[in-house]
Image (cartoon, rainbow, N blue to C red):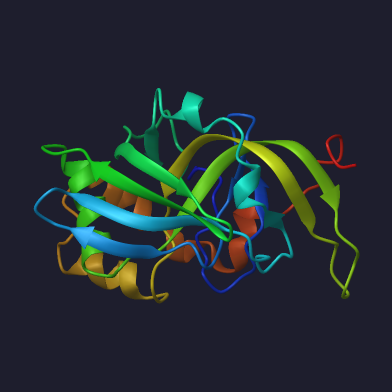
Length: 213
């Protein structure tokens, strides 16, 4: 089964539980800023202070363990530590008032990582997601018919991930058909994404209730 990260760009994002006990947050404004093909590096926004489509907020300045994270700055594919190798390492993280920016150095000579880099380079993929553990969180006032969002004031970064949020719903299918994805395990994994319309694998559940003030 694919790892627990939302792949459908049409349905709402939000904080989601991950198999490792942490949480994932793929914000719609997390995006690539620049690409350096010569050095296989990508600079990107990995999180922002704006509410996501589920109304959840992760405060950039609430990051509390950056020095510890940089001792082992792993960057994963879809928050998956077991099925796939890390795609690269984080070179630096810049915590700004309204967003968190990071630069990723993709692994050279690893077809899986190079395929993912190529999908970003050509604009097929755009999304990034933080894997984190909340320290302090509270429920936001309800402002609509859906559930109230969460406000995560303090958090620890476990990793961040390249995630299969395509620039448009058909982009991944076209990329696979064009042969842009050479690694067979990645090609097979990406082929499953259109089979999850509406994010059926990623239904929200209130696993943060014990941390919410």
